[in-house]
Amino acid sequence: MIKVDVQQIKQRFGIIGNNPALNRAIDVALQVAPTDLSVLITGESGVGKETFPQIIHQNSPRKHAQYIAVNCGAIPEGTIDSELFGHEKGSFTGALSERKGYFEVADGGTIFLDEVGELPTPTQARLLRVLETGEFIRVGSSKVLKTNVRIVAATNVNLVQAVGQGKFREDLFYRLSTVPIQIPPLRDRGEDIFLLFRKFAGDCAEKYRMPSIRLDEEARQLLLSYRWPGNVRELKNITERISVIEENRDITADVLRVYLPDLNMEKYPVLVKQDAEQKIFNSEREILYQVLFDMKKDVNELKKLVHDIMGGKMPMAVADETSYSHSIHTPHPVHPVPSIQEAEAVEEEETLSLEEVEKEMIRKALEKHNGRRKNAAADLKISERTLYRKIKEYNLE
Ligand SMILES: Nc1ncnc2c1ncn2[C@@H]1O[C@H](COP(=O)(O)OP(=O)(O)OP(=O)(O)O)[C@@H](O)[C@H]1O
Ligand SMILES: [Mg+2]
Image 1: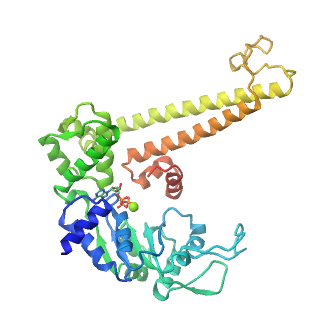
Image 2: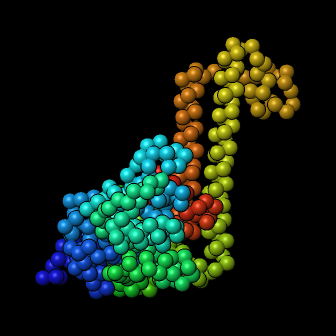
Image 3: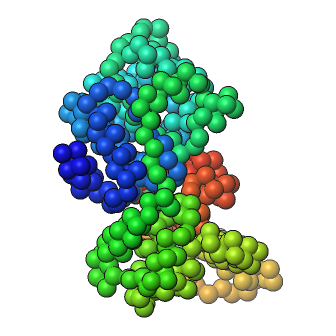
């Protein structure tokens, strides 16, 4: 009976695999769904935590009310309280009108607090209060409001350790983890990996209308023994990459090995690292060249525009950058002068291309770190919050 339910859930939510620990996790989610108990989903990055709060919400009496997913790591510290609990008009600069927070909006429903370990300490205190009493206060108000929200939280960091380090409130940890659900890492799921590989390879083949890739026996063994630090997300990325790049659809262990960064790192630590960095450096340099080239184009267009507006009265001495250093008297080739509309179009194109460059750099960094945002953010020298924002903005998930 229960087994059928778990299978149904897997089908409905697109969960692949038959590993007992995974089945058990789904089963616990189903058992706890009809209650109001807080659930804490733990597991390494990329194991598939994100569907669990939805399974719980959809199988609870709250399913017709709001489900709100909040990425605690992506909201700036300065606004997180206002986002979660709302604010009154004028409570801070820029608070032009009152705003309801998620806890008010999701009354009767479920809030998924993703990356809950990232919550700032003052917010942890507010959260504990709303969990214990259902009471909260909007920022800038003194009126106590009531709500009835079910919390499912997730984290890929060790919260017990965070408690030990004083970064996470112990009382909140116990309150959140009334029912803990642990999602096993991919390396512990045995043969599930072949099912997942076949699914991702098949999806990719269908999408690009080509035959699916297949692994030979040795490659299968490699897939099975690899550590998969980025778990299912990493397997998905790698399967897609191989599907698109390799012409020969029969994948050997030698071919597969090239795509497993962690393995290469262990085997040839210095060589591979240099190689990988060199590659990144090269592509970053290319991007920079492109930016400089675009900027130059922009400046030239602007010069021409100014020249046009001045009715051709301004000497175009610097219009052609190649002649700039040696003579201001040399006659210059006549460029077609763009109209205002054309200039605007150029400007729009430039903004677009800068966005593209940024997007590309973020995409590259994420790829380099198998989707591990923390490392990618460090590489890009931006905060994790900014990276989250950008990923959302550019739809890079
Ligand atoms: N069992 C599975 N079957 C099919 N796809 C899966 C499975 N597990 C994970 N995935 C896919 O792997 C990717 C990563 O999963 P998800 O985003 O849930 O990871 P996560 O545990 O939330 O990781 P993080 O801690 O980094 O946020 C998603 O594209 C998800 O659809
Ligand atoms: Mg996640």
